[in-house]
Length: 118
Image 1 (cartoon, rainbow, N blue to C red):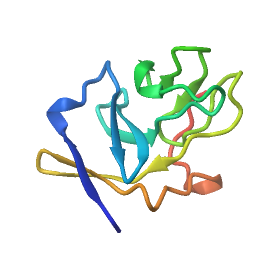
Image 2 (image 1 turned 45 degrees about the vertical axis):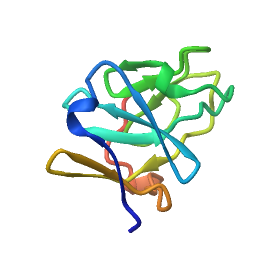
Image 3 (image 1 turned 90 degrees about the vertical axis):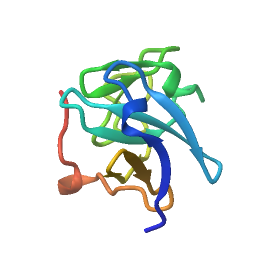
Image 4 (image 1 turned 30 degrees about the vertical axis):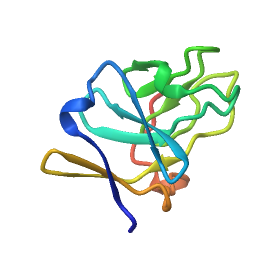
């Protein structure tokens, strides 16, 4: 695993996503409704918009431009106009350090998806 430290846990709130970039890959860091940290691809698959400029709605990240919401656990869009998922990257918290690996996205297809929000 090629983890990289991208933020401290205190930098990631329950209400505002933050954007980081690792090896040229833009990533949105967010917290779900339980406070768990997630790392999603930062580019909306509908309109090439930065998702970190969007809104956290429960366990999804909403694109500010056209309203598509992406599930934090699976990266799958929950509504149109987006229909392609964004990548989900592994997150590990080590003390106050948030570590992610952009080179090995999580396989969230089928049974690998931990949680779907309807």
